[in-house]
Image 1 (tube, helix red, strand yellow):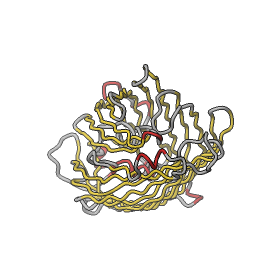
Image 2 (spheres, rainbow, N blue to C red; image 1 turned 45 degrees about the horizontal axis):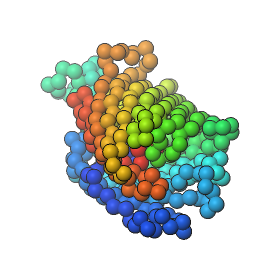
Image 3 (cartoon, rainbow, N blue to C red; image 1 turned 90 degrees about the vertical axis):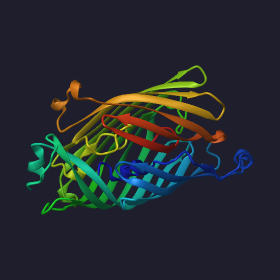
Image 4 (cartoon, one colour; image 1 turned 90 degrees about the horizontal axis):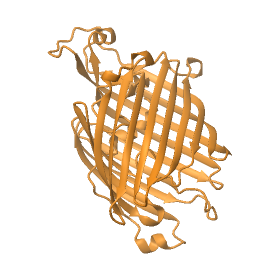
Length: 369
C-alpha cells in the first residue's frame, strides 16, 4: 500500500524523549564500530489513540577503511496503539565501496486500523450499500488492514552524482471495511521497477547544501502474481540552500502517481510520507503532489529548530488539479544533535493542515529517506 513499507512513517510519532546509548567518549574513539540510538515512543493522535512503542537504530561504516561512504544504518521499530493497531519492522540503509553501491531493505508486518473518507456520489460507487450519514459531503469509513511486506533496492553509481538501479516489493494485505456486506479487499502485490537518483548532498542525515532527486517506477502485473495490474511513478526533488553557518533553506517537490487498475491499497494519501499536517486519511487519490519549503536553524551547538510549510493535492487524474482546492499545511519542530561526530539528529515536529494535524518524531532530518 503505496510502497507498503511507507506505513512505517505514520507510526514514528512520539514525545521528545530519547537517549544516546553510547557516551561521547566512545563515539569519538576511532575504534567505535556502531553508534546506537534508542527512542521510546509515546503519543496520542485523533486517528490511532494513544500509542506506545520504541525505535532503535545503529549507525556504522560497512567497510573499515571506507572514509567516503556515508554512515550505514540498521533499525527496528515496534508500535501498539489503543485502537489495536500494531506494527513491527526492520530497516537497513547500506553504503559500500566509497558510496558506489547503495542498498536498502525493509521487512515488516502489522494490523493497521485506520479510516478513509468517501465523498458523495462516489461513496455509493465504491460501497453499494445504503449507509445513513448526516454529512452531505461524504463519510469517514473505518477499515482494518492486516499486512506483510518486504522491499529491496540496489543502486550503482554511474556518473558523478548519478545512481541507477532497480527495486522490488512484495506485499500481502487484507482490508476489511467497517460496512455491512462490504467485500474484503485481499491483495497480493509483487512489483519491480527501475530507480534513478541524483545525490549531491554534503551529508545524508543532515544535509545543508546540494540536490537530491529521485525517479522510480514500480509495475505490478497479474502475470507475475499480483492481484491487479498497475504502475506507480514516484518523483522527488529536494534542493538545499545554505545561508551562512547555522541556517539552511530547502525547496521540495514530491509526486506519487498510480495508473492502471489501481486497487484501494495502491492509492496515495496526502501526509502519509511527505507533507506534515495530515494524519486522518481524508485526502486520497491515485495521484498525490506536494510542494513545500523548510527553514532549519541551529541556535546552539546541539539545539536547533525547523519551520516548514507547503501545499498538496490528491486527485485521480492530473487534469483534476485545481489551485483553489490545494491543501495547505505548516508547522515547526525542535532538533537535538544526539551524536555530534556523525551529525545524527533527533527531533519532534508539530504540524497542522486543513481540519487535521499531526505530531512526528524522527531520527535524522525530514526527506533523507
